[in-house]
Image (cartoon, rainbow, N blue to C red; front, side):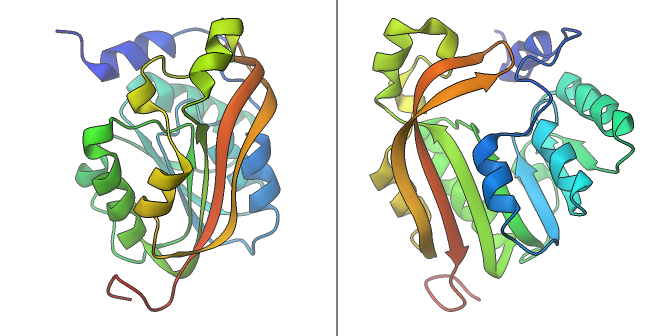
Length: 213
C-alpha cells in the first residue's frame, strides 16, 4: 500500500519547486500586517512560505510528512541565508508546547475529513491567546474549477476540500478577521495555475473562550 508520505516524496523529488519559490500571496499579505514573532507552518512542503517568513525576521518552525519537502526547503533557506526549524512527521509527533507560537499558517494543508477537526483544534492549543491563524485552502466548489482547468491543482476528492461552515466550526474560538470564499488566479509553480476557488480565513485566538487560555 502506498503511503501518503511516499506520494509527496515522489512529487517533491523534482529539481524545480513544483509550487514555486515565492510565498503564497494571501499569507504574505496577512503576515506583513503582524509584528514578527514565532510562526508555525503546518504541511509546509517545499518551504516557500517558511523561507519568506524567515526573511521578514520571523522565528520559523515548520513540519511536513515529506522528507523530500524538507530537503527542498533547506535548499531554499540556504539560498536566502535564513534559518528555519523544519521537522518531518505528524503533528502529534512534534512535541510542541501549548501556546508556543504567535502565528500559525495553513496554506493548502488539506487534511482527511476524519482527522481534520482534531488536528485543527490541536494546532489551536499551540497558539498563544491573541495569536493569529492564517489559512488558505480550496473550497468544495473547486471541483468545478478543476473540471475546466486541471492545472489549478488541489485534491480531487471533495471530502478533502473545505467549506466556510467547517472552518468556522473548527476555529470557533477565534475572532474572525477575515472569512471569505473567493476566486483567485493562481500562479504558483507547476501545480497551481489558473482560476481556483478558495477559502481565506484569518482569525485571532480569543484570550478567553472554550479552551483553557
